[in-house]
Length: 579
Image 1: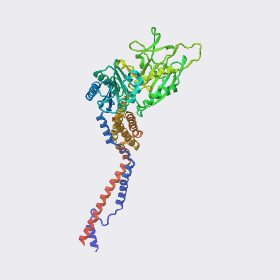
Image 2: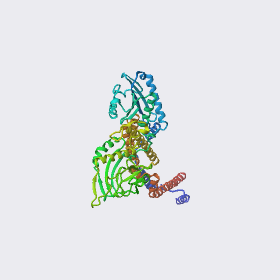
Image 3: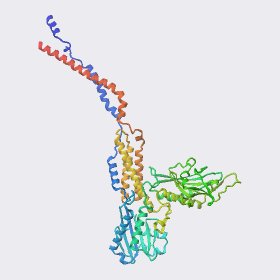
Image 4: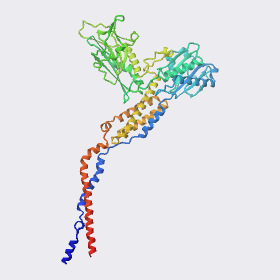
């Protein structure tokens, strides 16, 4: 027996065999550690997950394409009403021919210079002829003119203001109208403060076509400017749709005199109607201040012929003293500068050598400035204290008229409507609100276009930014702002296509404000570049060394276990053969 055991021991090879079954403790231990690391990986990824509210990328792209294709040419409707013509001029063929001729002349005057927010070529012309018998023949859209509402004889016995109010009753809807009255007198063209004008006198067919088309294109389409209103020409409105009008009374040297004003009275009587009329274009607030020791930056020279101190147009860029004039609001609409006694009276000299009638100008980035000279430029040397004055109501009204002209220019319109000589118009009726209805329509159309383009551009930039940075945080607030902005922009475009100008302007302003708020949201700006590579660089030094060692140990232990199990299997096989 001993010999047999000795022989078995000699045949046993410890390198390839083992007599006991290999244990699983080491393998179970290392596997459990590895499993704990693997099971913790989802929790790690969840902890570094970035929340992204879903954004309507497709809707943003569709809106951008829709606005680009439509070019935002807002439709306009025009009508011609002819009164006091004989029966031969009232048959349907003549009326239709007149409509075609007016339309062709309008296209000729408008040309191919199509401005965003203008009527473009998207407009219609209707014609209604009311003969002496009271019968009406119409071409195109009907229902705007109430036949018999205004008698042709009213144009001979009523003044322009009365006629303007009278025509409102006979003209309905948001349609631009020109009433042509055949009378035995010189031709006279009047543009009212609503959406209509009238031409009276001995007018032939060609004169009617030229005068009517000229009024339609130059005024109702282009706002009274020959070149029209280019985009970005009007007063810049903040991203939130707000404009602050700051009115400042500047006393250059209070040692000479001190002037004050009752601005509350100005605001209630003069400014309130203006702010209300511009409510659709911008959310306007008004503020005022009185400043002392505010000398100008430029120098003035004494002129013997004018017996005044003179500053020229070349001095205007240096007139505003930004160090002393604390005009720190978004828009400084009006600064009334009262010069000191050492440079009083102070007059603005134009390039042609004449002095300015308003003695005011517009300074870029600051707004309008008016130089107001006191009635007496001599200081009271016997008094040690400066004399205090309050501007009279007449002075305030004159100043406000100049301010109103400057405000109109800041909005891209002419300073006033007294340019009949260049436009062959006999009279323009001014509105007490500072802006006529057809001027407000022009502003609304152009601001709607500008706001929608800005909204689409901002949303498009946000869409590209979000898609290029997958680790950017997008909160629900941002997603809601984008969705509401899209809805407002779509509704604004729809209302504009229907000719609802005020509503479309308000909605486009809302869409632009929400798009800007979404793009400049603090959560985007704070972590806009938190990329996946950034996370990998932060967490790798903590987890990679430990996890790599555990993984290598698990592979090594599994390999060892297989080898030991193979040895045990070899020994059992040998035992079976010997038995």
